[in-house]
Length: 259
Ligand SMILES: [Zn+2]
Image (cartoon, rainbow, N blue to C red):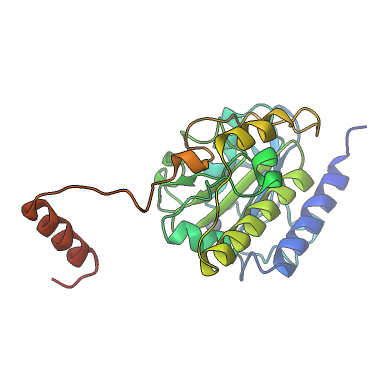
């Protein structure tokens, strides 16, 4: 049975509290929305802690992100929600947060795209990294365009992460998977580096999605996720001229601000 607007308001309040308790949002960070019908979105307002929301704080916007009702102001990140709903008719809820480990990867310029854990391969495939875009401007969403059709969660460079699904709890779970995966990847790196699954095993996991009733548009493609065969071989020998070597060193020193 379809939930009432009141129930959906309560769902957002509950997910906001969970995200706050998990430490994924500081101060007034993060935002959430739910597609109410063909014309309206229920969304969190700006300037409020999402851990202390009241159902009446939520606002209603149209599918262009223009506020229709509610006392508080719309978030400047609404454009991201609107774009996801426009590109993905199957999506009914969007959750955006700044979970610290996943955001650490996003800040280091690293996607979570290695085939390491069966659950992550089955549920998300991989988590790409969208280019940085200034919040509150059209640039925020530009980097997401190539990924929205194919992925259900992504990192946003120097910013955070976004996850979306058929309902808000599922979107929250996807965000939880992203942060959990980021933590495990980080630990694996500290312990000598993750061991990536071979392509044949990744394919088996994708094939098992039907059995687990995982509905996702994400497909197994070269590099998403990266299988063992896609990883650079550390023992591979490369050849370069002295000039090329000096150019690489110069570039590295420049990046580090040495000169
Ligand atoms: Zn944000």
